[in-house]
Image (cartoon, rainbow, N blue to C red; front, side):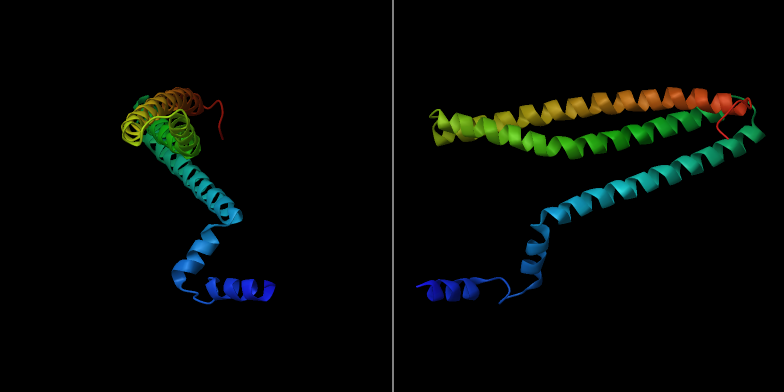
Length: 169
């Protein structure tokens, strides 16, 4: 009996029909693959942020030599604030999506558990999806704008202080 079971498993095993799709699914089902992708994406974002910061500071130093006014510092700080605000929104979205899905699934399962009919469950599921997505979007915008404003203000004062020869070398 065990031998028949092993033969059936071997016949239905994905290794017998190793198409690229099944290999891809097997690789993507591993937790360490997702951890690697997560770390890789954040490393790329960090590298991009650092390169962008260095190029913006280089542009600012070039502009401040040509125009000693405060406008280049304002432009650079608003640009840095905007980019880091968007970056913080993307980071928060990566964290918020799984939490949102768990919340949505929990609410729909609880509604089904307490006897909602299937049609009403679909209608309620659509309403819940709209409410949760709207709430997440509003929160992301608030947090992204806050980070952008803080980065812009701190960047402006750091650049002006640096232009006066007091720091950031």
